[in-house]
Image (cartoon, rainbow, N blue to C red; front, side, top):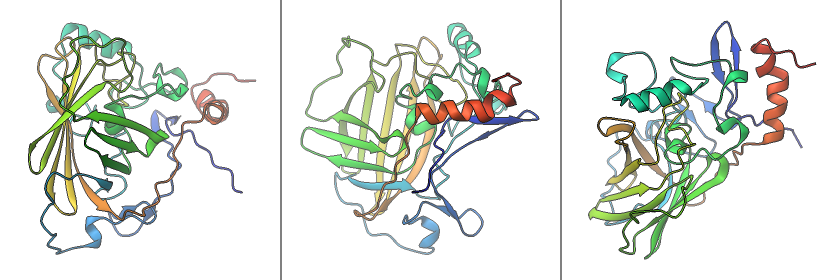
Length: 289
């Protein structure tokens, strides 16, 4: 059996350039045509006219519609990357900016060599929500029951429950959660909306080190536009760290075959340590004899 190197969140630094290491196989065809094996994308169906959307149904296996790389946002949230452009400057409060500057990410305008990061995720702490969709979103499976909507994520094989049985988010959550406490409802026959609260503030929002406080609420929307597509939108609302809510992600997804094989993509502490020893520490000038 071939051995795989699985340091999915680590990075190497050469002349100040940080490059992410992803181990999941991807196949490149024409320009922009990048796929996971077995997946189908919009470039496979040019000129198609999809059938109408089913009512109140977002179940199924979903993949970024454009290509396999469309959900990978190494430099920060897709809609607001950490690229130094004024239009992408987040509306920090003073407390939020101080929290951001205390983070040492390996991507974005404040990046450091990976050996010097204080990002909790390379040590395989849970990345939490919404980072799981703002950082490295791949294939997901959505399951609907009368009581809840369950979302299974490929990256690190995680899952979330969104309650749909009429309950409300508690005003006080017993203890902070990596993934938050989520409730959802149908806004109309083709739009499912959810809100999450009660987050553990040790997690980051994205790879660029954007912070959140324990007051954060995340609003997500899944709009079924036709039989084959859902548009996922993520909005961050954190009055402690940001002066206003901001949209972090708008990502069209394409429906896949029910038999689509969702690959493993795990964070392995032992392989991360090996990666640091062989690449990250030497790149940062750290002696690892």
